[in-house]
Image 1 (cartoon, rainbow, N blue to C red):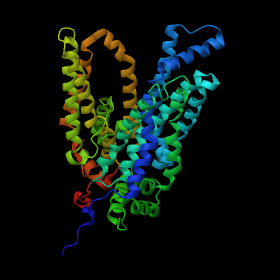
Image 2: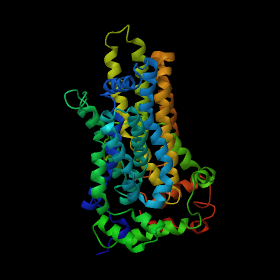
Image 3: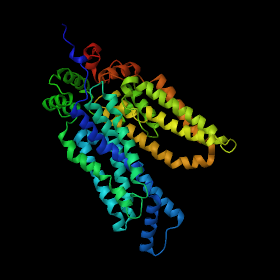
Image 4: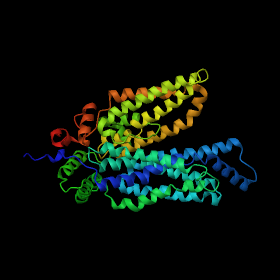
Amino acid sequence: MEQQDPTKKEGRLTLVLSLATLIAAFGSSFQYGYNVAAVNSPAELMKAFYNETYFERNNNYINEFSLTLLWSVSVSMFPFGGFIGSLMVGPLVNKLGRKGTLLFNNIFSIVPAILMGCSEVARSFEMIILSRLLVGICAGLSSNVVPMYLGELAPKNLRGALGVVPQVFITVGILVAQIFGLRNLLANKEGWPILLGLTGIPAALQLLFLPFFPESPRYLLIQKKDEEAARNALKRLRGWDNVDWEMEEIQQEDEAEKAAGFISVLKLFSMRSLRWQVISIIILMGGQQLSGVNAAFVVELLGRRFLLLLGFSVCFTACCVLTVALALQDTISWMPYVSIACVICYVVGHALGPSPIPALLITEIFLQSSRPSAFMVGGSVHWLSNFTVGLIFPFIQVGLGAYSFIIFAVICLLTTIYIFLVVPETKAKTFMEINQIFTKMNKVSEVHPEKEELKDFPLSTLGQ
């Protein structure tokens, strides 16, 4: 009987891989979602605390405009911190590793959890504002590093399935924050500091358990040059001893990238060989605005490209119908129900592809030397878009009224057209195979002008 080609051996979801995924996602992505929603329920209580504290210091209350501005600063510190965290991704993942960065990132969760928990006792709203900045940095790092870490741990046939797990945990974090934010639980005068401080628990658990799980084999071999550690990590993750073919694939990627070294953000924008990859992540991350419950594991069945096209198309249609519904809600009695249905359809559509897949694609369409900088660019675009929409949408709503969502419909339509024309399917392909696709799109004879050794690199050696 003919022996099976080891390159065609399907990776499986081992206990080590599944636990590493759950701990990384719960310790980082969960608290990202939790902190997005935690301040919503106790908002009025916190504003009252701001006012009381100000009165205790100055013997008079804050005027309405100043209080609104102070609260807006408190809320907007989170996406601003996310932007700062995104800029820190590249240096940290190259210095500390993917797992090491996640462990270090817990500082930006545990410290603000303590500060927020003690803010009411200390009579300091400044502690809350500083804490929102710090948990924003935590979210900015985790939203980029967790997909990178899981994408490098997973075998190619499970990369898509594991890639959407962080988004699921973000959604669960939002849900848990909303449940704890019920008035008879923690959204009350005594409980709101505890509600904010609970974000430190997932971080503490991650700090306790993640050290027992492997670092990214790609980081160990390519950055650290530790072949034995990389091989042992792969053995633990895959559940079998014969990892020679996967080690060979990583080494081929390493050989192909030796000439380039680390690719900075500035260099990333100047390289013709990465032109369409950079444009793609900017457009996809810019178009990614909401989060929702994800249809995990359909990514491997239907593919990334199909789900992105389907998701953005649903969002486009929902925005158009929502515009009509809002314009007619005063003349037709049942139009408000149509509006609600459109919002639900929009969230579901966004959850199918636009929410989870762009971060997964960054892992797949960039090789090791450019991946950290790519996550910095993608994360920065994501958080700046998030910040911008939150800042300007109230003014758009005042100016355009019922027609506000036309802007988002146009963005969804243009993003859908771009995906259809440019973004290839990456399902079940190795990183090198995906990069070969973009090499042809970028019309260069190799992945990078300095990497002459990849020019004649045969696809047949990579497996399927």
